[in-house]
Length: 143
Figure 1 (cartoon, one colour):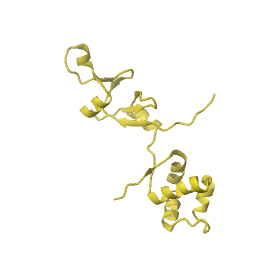
Figure 2 (cartoon, helix red, strand yellow):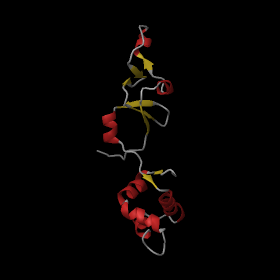
Figure 3 (cartoon, one colour):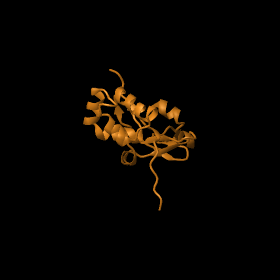
Figure 4 (cartoon, one colour):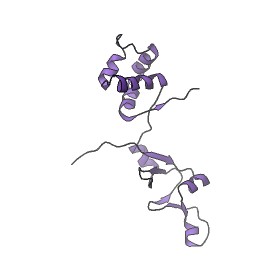
């Protein structure tokens, strides 16, 4: 048996809005049958869509459904990190091509001289730093 790493996906939680119904071309069951408008909506090829379900989009633009409970068990949002930490990670990856271990070690080494803010953030958020390094991240918005 082979195991594969989960790849990031693009997904949006269905909120029942007309905008999302149009965006994903959801089909009203009543209209489809020519009877009346129905509260039941369907995503072509995937089945009934309920508010709270997730609509995922593949690389080919195809959409499929993921129930909320399955989505929460399977996927996690990308971690949000400060811009200074994101810049540090980019420097580690692009400029000097450091490994994760070296990036973590060098943040606290005087030779590499990560800023005190970055050093402090990594020290207090090492799990988030590791997830961001491995899975990707979103840069925190300025307030």
